[in-house]
Length: 384
Image (cartoon, rainbow, N blue to C red; front, top):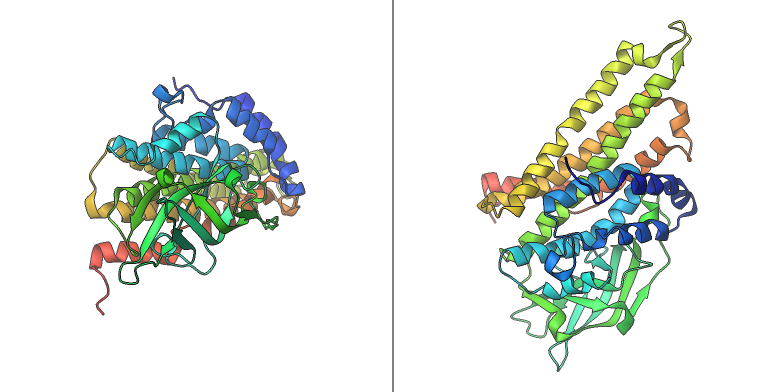
């Protein structure tokens, strides 16, 4: 029998609060307090440091469950889990460059993932942010990051920028900055269609300082075979797929409940659960949903067990992300079609899921990038 970190009672509390945080566009401080008390922010921290020592597969399954209760809360905490998960994945491969992340998380620090930039379709392979080397070996960062989840509460920000000190050898420099050290402005600008409680506000870096021991990678622009890039993609894409799979799971549950609750005058007062067309739509959604969890657990287990997929790792990871987010959108759409006009109202849970699930199209890797990655793996790069 599986023992979950997130109890049914905790998830029930989170689910009960989700509508209010969505309607008020507020950060779920109460959810974070519950998750912290459960030790969930130390999920990837090894037991030797006082953490739970969970695997990527175990955390992915917990994220599915959390997202069924409150997608925006799950997406927000996902970013802390991504940073700590990268550190754990590197440590498992003999690289302790991010050991300090695990130590900080053990002490209660909250990490955010500050890499996305407006207009940067190179994503991790280029940056508009300026990284200026300091005499002590540290760096100061100048630029604007978007979609910085956990904005009201993060204490540490994993970020990166471009160092053009040597024009012949530009570098993308990855580091962690501390909120308490200043040089950071968090704008109160998160008023969105969905995932509202994630409070993924814009973050302006104006000389934010990373100490030398917190500068952990300096890479050339462009794709890289560095283990850090693999750990980033693996953790980010798998945990993101888990969140959206949780949304799809909840949508199926709501569709079944609606079919059993609603009655048809045309069919003599029988419930829609007896209507062949409704049954077909729900079955279609359930069949699609049923295929996602095995894909997530299998790929996560491969990461945990240090499987060697070589050049096929990145196609598998981006493919999982695209399938999970697109599948969740289709499942939610089917659920709406069987649930009646009540789901169109702003306060309806299924209506909220419909808004939340749309965010999946904006996360890296986007549709175009993912298809390019898979095409390159199968066909080779486009000739110049």
